[in-house]
Image (cartoon, rainbow, N blue to C red; front, side, top):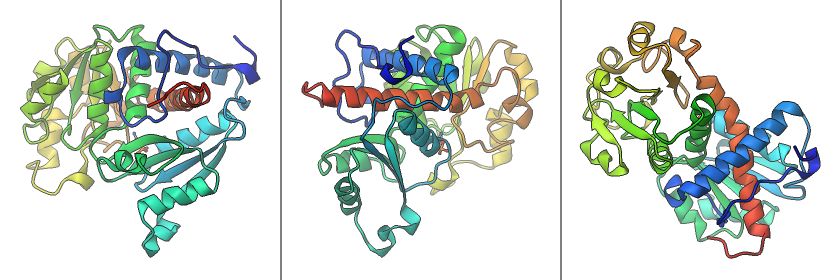
Length: 327
Ligand code: CP
């Protein structure tokens, strides 16, 4: 293991030639694996030397620009940036000049004028990052845009699966729930299928359209069919805030058909892993006892957020400072 101040991302054939991270759709299998390998290295560093800082981003400023609420993503980006030696600015849309009519572009330009080289953005609109890309000089990282993508969530989920099972290639994953409104589902489907997992997507027809098979996944509306033989069951949050119509007859019916409780878990088997990106609607997608069961990796996913976000920041920095052409 290299010394604390010199720990650097490993290099791989092809490297990581990106200035921004907007989505997993843009990444190759090799780039995803490089990100996971880098996160593994950082995780080993974090575990063995808690509280220490690297020099990777010394002198850099990371701005967290969140227009939607977040607990996990914002906090772990902040921890990740600080561990890499960066200064961090947390922008709060609610108390900013956005309330006085400042535009997204003006806000981003203002943060850059104040020295931010990395902007980590969450926004309610799909495509907000793509829009801002043309306006910023620094690196832009998508922390979730509408129902489009949440790339670092998919990377930390992939890391969690690889840690638990030793591989992703060939792993059978059932993703259950509200895929229609879920940026997490889209990014996780891109990530897992690119790295060779066999993914089944399941939920009510209103929330899991057949057209999602274009992601390279099998679509079913039958829970028992989806979880049969699965090694991982990944439960998605019901996204009340993005629903503008009657997608579900009732939460009770959803729970009965697609919710995970201890009785269902016992039927599926004691080996299957339970995952959920959070925040959880307790008692709807998953019950409290399943969340805290030995098969649950839900808090492990959160922990892996720091190492994955360190890997993203470090590889973007490495690509930027290499002088090579970056996209
Ligand atoms: N999974 C996730 O994005 O959680 P937060 O909304 O708390 O960041």
